[in-house]
Image (cartoon, rainbow over all chains, first blue to last red; front, side):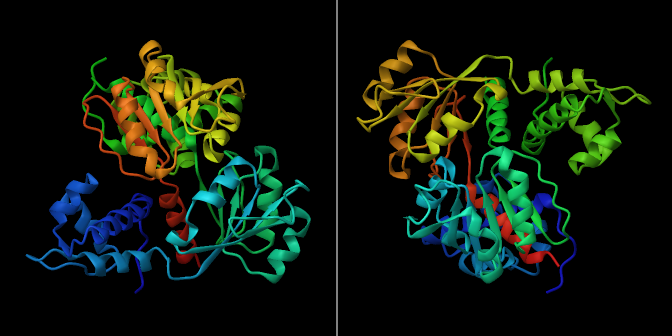
Length: 210
Length: 210
């Protein structure tokens, strides 16, 4: 269906819906009211109804939501069925942590390759994913259309690597470098992961806690 | 000053204010209107005025905000002046990435120690931070009051390690394990970092982008 513009707050909540619905599915819960789902997610029932109404009609008055079908719907809204692919740039500690411990497939992604400048890594395979030389990035992207580039290079390398990803046709950059990226190609989205934002929120909460 | 209960959405935005104000300070900007700050942060001017009004009176009609003093105020609101300390549990790829590349001090924290079970790491020092055996965690916490435990252990070890942190008196857990932690001690806050939420938001955005 054609959607109205969805607010970024709603977009941020969608993965949380998916996560909670997945937990409910695993716990064998078949249906849930917006009230109960709201309590688990720290949202009001009306907020939940309003969020989901951006995407269509879900749930029935007096019944609530069927957990599995709502989970499937949210999964589809999130684009998890679109066979997105990802490559990692930078096989340092963080790149390696993502390769070895993060389940890209649980988010609907296939991690197809990693790139680094370190000759002792190039040619190896980590967690089943080949590590290539950064020299081959452009030709790789030319021959292998790629949805997302994961940036775990040092901060100073972030901008030139982002430029190469964009020139190579990626549609999104998952940016762990903490560098602000100026991407001027329309349709290319940057998602920044700012660890410090999370730690500062925690700092606020422990400073406030009684 | 005594504050009203601040919504979690506002808490989430505070670190972003701090980040933008820091960038503005570095760029030499002395004052800024709520309009201009709003544009940079993708918020409306009235949203900004409303957010900041939770914490006191900032800015002047017709002048806007003094960047440096607002930054200092936000820093204080975030508790960055409270000399918070942190320890890392789990010196795997992710723990190591945080120790070597994340600037705890930029968030007002001192990283004092790390703990692991791996005998080849225990006794070493990484980025100037000593790695101790997990066996010594309890006695360490007893002798060294610690604000936050950073959980980068494998998911299966998350719950018992969280229990030990809480028993040891930490006030916050920065949880990278993707395990849901049930912390029942009042005053102890858990901040979860869910990489998948971020990747799924990106998935949504690239699936929606024209």
